[in-house]
Length: 250
Length: 192
Image 1 (cartoon, each protein chain N blue to C red):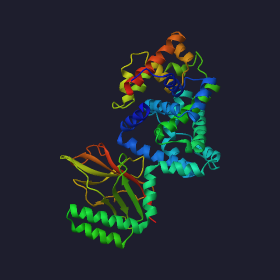
Image 2 (spheres, chains in turn green, orange):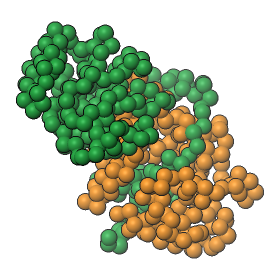
Image 3 (cartoon, rainbow over the protein chains, first blue to last red):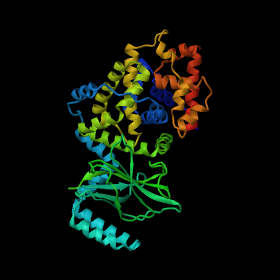
Image 4 (cartoon, chains in turn orange, brown):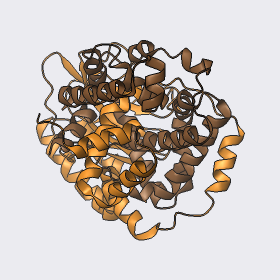
């Protein structure tokens, strides 16, 4: 890397908290107006972020949230146009909106197509039964699991009123020898991710959520690549292939 | 381009659980920008204890730390639309707001006194050892000799100014400034 520029040094000092008075104010102004400087600041924040994670968690007093709630009763001033832009920035949300927007009929048509495609890859009578079941009953929650890098939808999770939860892959997933696909859900941060399914290949899975409470909005589902037999530590260790949050089906 | 590469590299170094959290925080910020207060509470429930911890390392007092986190959440609520997920992570954006507020309170109300005992007990090495072994920042900090690397921890984590660093490390102001400059340059070179 080249010698850091004066801007880099100023951005670093700003993020470190070493600027005071006029210099500090000047840096804050430049973040608003100078895109390159704002990027240098962001880069320094990312570099140093691991230090924030070393802080010991200290419970706030119970009254603190009440005070914050009081102080934030008014909606942000620039809520409307920029908020839409912000929502567009959140790609996962986008995807859910896409699926909702496409309407459940459109989603079913896509599912039908995807299911047939997968059916051709993996011969399965159960798939066809699932397809019929899908047509007969609509899920309450749907999560579209998307690959973070390619933004491709890889699978759909459907949660039904009777507690049945299923995963339907939308594309074949290449599983190397000695590895397995593991499905997780994060229902409660305090408990952490729970394993709900394990499979050697991308196929429709009935997920085991019996030990967990009912699916809720925004509940996270994800598929990771794990050693054969599943993650040895009971938490995801491998790369996340696809992930998505549950949204109520219309 | 260097900036973009760094952000991507940073994101890849997250543990899987952190990646989930990051996605949830980014989505919650988008919802805050749209005026969804439940999303603000979601961020609070998930991050407030850690944020209090971050503020306490700068302010030492619980009441001041809560004040900083209170102010931070008001700013997060008003400024959520300014968060750009393409530029950096939600996590670093949120914690930057908290540190800004804590530093501001620290400057206004709680300058370290030479007799301030709480500042005496700061252990930079313990902070370093709390970072995961896989942390690139940890690996790069460990490549910088002490006490030069301490200035990074003391300034970033405990909000010390150049003057306070010089006082604590008992070296001239010019030396501290050069340690800061060289340590940050070394970090940038090591981390990309």
